[in-house]
Length: 250
Ligand SMILES: CC(=O)[C@@H](O)[C@H](O)COP(=O)(O)O
Ligand SMILES: NCC(=O)COP(=O)(O)O
Image 1 (cartoon, rainbow, N blue to C red):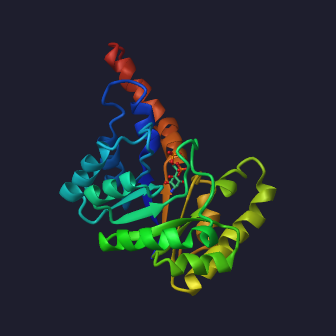
Image 2: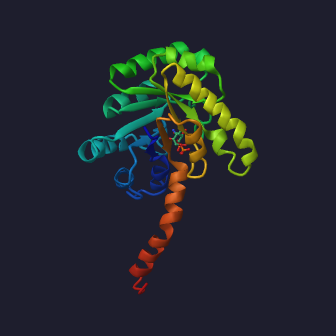
């Protein structure tokens, strides 16, 4: 099975939130993503709603249910009671638990499975009761024992935190060892029947080596790099449309 793509809508929501206007429209761009081959949509609602707003969740749920019933909704976040209530309401196919502090600018590490095993076991059980697949954000440091603890919580998958890998964009000589550690973590997970997702700072350039090293990678969720590409590759046509709107024959 090839790796599937879940498009993270946080960056689009962040642009929208600059103004009190409904564009860029999170639902419309989610629709384009699913029409264009994405298998799912990801959101990471943070407590301050600076990106995705809680009110976006039912809109995305309805988009998938009404128009793309085979697509998956993946909700990421730290499991507060408020977050679990959001999950209860939006009935995502997958929940990815991330150890984020509300003050963090973005996610920058995986769970400490040794320290948080009991907490995660409890939360995973609650989510499994809701009927959702559960994935746990994990450092890709090759720690096979940590992966075993992740499995013992009852989770279905881990999501490899690929931030350090994405951070090698200007220093490819650093990429090899990081990629190998991610690969070893994935090998350890797959060996005990724990599925593997990946995400954070993935791009068109760094995705092929990752998929080659981890051929059984189930899913990648991508937002920032994908949104940057959408702006760059969509810019030419957009400028032409605005020139035409000015009355220019172009
Ligand atoms: C878990 C993860 O790596 C992503 O969800 C990332 O946190 C994107 O969220 P932001 O776009 O809000 O930074
Ligand atoms: N789970 C990672 C994710 O959804 C996207 O992260 P990014 O591509 O915005 O860094």
